[in-house]
Image 1: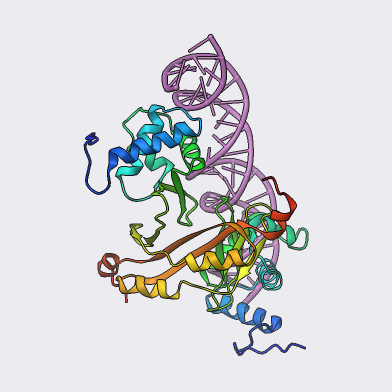
Image 2: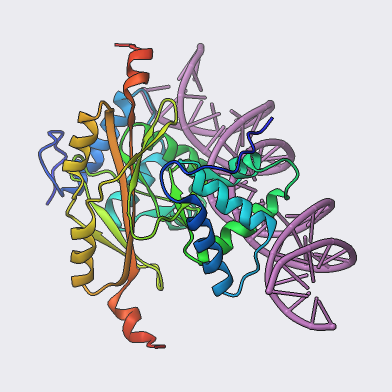
Length: 157
Length: 157
DNA sequence: ATATGTGCAAATTCTTTGCATTAGA
DNA sequence: TCTAATGCAAAGAATTTGCACATAT
């Protein structure tokens, strides 16, 4: 199904995406190691953002030390391959950074489920901030609420 | 040495604001203690969001233990008097919650300065999320960049 | 061959908790 | 008075660091 093409035009071709990511890593002077490859593969396949602990638990048992997950993630983040999310509970979570396709999350405060929201309202915002004299503008935006399921599940009031 | 002046009617009616906040506290069944009063006063006077450590350092020396700052802040947050900000560096910061007047921050990645942005782009966003079935919708939005000063200061390229 | 990456253990940092004491209503 | 709040010490949780060994290039 998938070809190992290097051209970065495919959006959801897993194989090419992994290859491209590995190329970026190598380009930045980093080595391709089992943990890094496994993490990239995992982050590309699975959806939600994962904490370091969740990532480690999802990797094949014994593939690497928890500490290595932290170090690999740091490398992947520097390289721009991975994006860090902050759900405000003191735990950082990470997801694959799909290029320029910016998106955000809706986190249910009751069941902690995460839904992806493909709309980004902040383009105008960033533009405004740039006009205020800022360079290299980025932003983080997370939305919190109680999902429909959880509202049905427990109707205390 | 600390500037311990109490008279400060510059922007908003500090006195009334403090009194109102204390009333909210009491209403919620909490006692008015020196640390709580001092924290509210401090958070109403000073601008930027402060970490627990910064808060403690800004209080009159010896007024209370650092732990008490954490505990007071927790109470103030529950009561809705204080809002927690997350600048993504693993440290939570707090600011006085000025009612419904929602605003956001622009954090300089170089000098860590914080500017307040009084515009909120997320009203439409929250509405959309509510239409998706979520209740009790809130959001966090922080903007990061390099401020004009820091761009001038070091021009590497 | 050699520098980069990893494992293990221990350290750091921020925050929370237990319990006796203090103080607000 | 009588319970909620505080101080101190110690625990907890997430993440980082030091150093010897392993491994990708």
